[in-house]
Each structure stands twice: as structure tokens, then as C-alpha cells.
Image 1: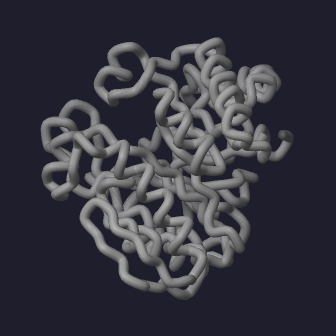
Image 2: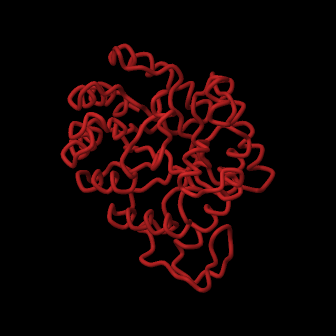
Image 3: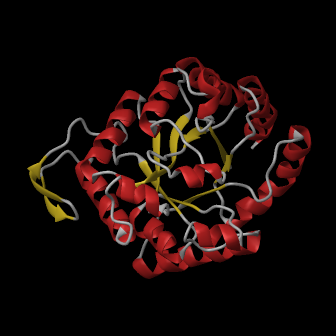
Amino acid sequence: MRFAVQLPIDHVREGREFVSREAIAEMARAAEVAGFDAVGVTDHPAPPARWVAAGGHHGLDPFVALAFAACATERVRLLTQVVVLPYRNPFLLAKSAASLDVLSNGRLVLGVAAGYLEAEFAALGADFAARNDVADETLDVLREAWRGEPIERSGRGFVAKGVVQLPRPAQPDGPALWVGGNARRAIRRAVERADGWMPFPATERLARHTTTAPMTSLDDLRTGVGYAREHAATIGRTRPLDVCLVPFGFTVNDPTAETSRLADEIPLYAEAGVTWLAFTLPAPSRAAWCDGVAALGALARAS
């Protein structure tokens, strides 16, 4: 089992406490020292104010934030959790990802999703209705662009006539691609076009809001993993699929108790097919966040 933790770059109202060069460096180093395998960041370039007021969040640009994290660390992987594929031209996304992978010596994991905030799509000039088709197409373009060979391809909003992107990513096959979402189309997307699947706990209400499927228990997770395996067999996929999940019911109000509980539950997650656990920790202050990372570090180091 491997472990990721999301950097609290969404705490923009606290200013330099969380969204400064010093803050990102300190928190990324704390995660690396604690034994975490990846640090993650979110992606919301233009969220609607009403959504933010209801509990949503702002954040730094994910590629810029992770570049600063890369400069402060040596080992920990850099995870976008998640980049919304239809928000960006696929070639610009491919260039950003390849650049970060090169400068970090091959540490990027590109977590992606189709997205769900219709108002944010409108602000960015993205087609909300076509988001799933665009997501599939973008994943195909990323793979092509990272080969560093001329591309002849027409798609939604672009025409590529012999374009080439260099440098290639540091990782020979490009950054790992992990697809977020609980819906069966997201699972198929992960199996057909990616290296990992990122389901997330979702009540019925949250699932409706994010236009995905509910996921409230290990049984729901096992159903999703089972479907992924069935689809892999159908299309002839044989290579493993990483599964990265936020643990069900996780809080760190009492890190010691949570660590003990999670230690008991990890074998159940592993048995269900999970290969990565991802955490979002409370961040009343930068120091408190780093303390929470340290408390969970023993679990990460022991697994």
C-alpha cells in the first residue's frame, strides 16, 4: 500500500500560511520525511462563488504548485488530484505535464477527470455536454504528444497538422494517468486509457451533485473494482490497474486513534484492490497540518 496526502493549497484566505513558496516547500518536505509516497493538489481555475460559499474551494494552479513542491523534495511523487481534462487544450495540458515531469526527474502522476461544475465550464469556454467525449479524446492526445513524434489529428476545438512536442517526459511512457470518478464510464476510461482509477467516497447527495455514482462502503468499492476487472478482461488488458482511494470515514481529529484504526483496515482495502490511500488533513495552521502528516507517517512507513 502506498500513501498520498493533499497539500492544502485551497486555504487561500490564510494567505502565506498555506499558499506561499515557503509553505509549499515546508509541507511537501514534511510529507516526504514522514514517508508519504505522493503529495497532491486540486484544480479549480474559475469556480463559481456560490459553490465556494457552500463548501467548495479555490486553489493554486496545480502545475505551478507541484513545481514548487518538486523543488523542495527529492523522492515524493507529484499528484494532480484531479486535473479537469475539458478545461484545457490537450496540447497545452500535454506540455504542462511533460515540463513538470522533466523538471521533477519523472515524478508526476497525472490524476484527471471529466469534471462536473457547469458554471466553471462556462467560464472557461468548455463544452459541459461533451465533457466525457472530450476527456477520452484528451487522454489519447496526451499519449500521442508525449511520444515526441509528428501528430496529424483533428478533434474538438483543434486541428493538429504535423505538430511535435519536445522535450518528451522524463518517464519513458509519459506520466502515469489516473482517472477519477465512480461512474462506470469513468471506470471504463481508466481501464481503456489509463494506468489507475481514483474512486472517492460519495453519498447519494454528493454523487448527484458531482454527476457520479454513490460510493459509501467497501462493498461499493469491490463492485467497482470487479467491474474494472471484467472490462479489462473484455478488452484484453493484462497490466495492473492502480486504485487510489480516500479512506471511508477518515478524520484526523485524533491522529493516534485514526492511525490505529487505519492500520487494522489496510488489509481490507488491499484485499479489495486498493493500491494507494489518499488523505486530506485538517489544516487549522501549517504547523498543525505538518503534525498531522507526521502522525500518519508511521502508518505510511510501516506499510
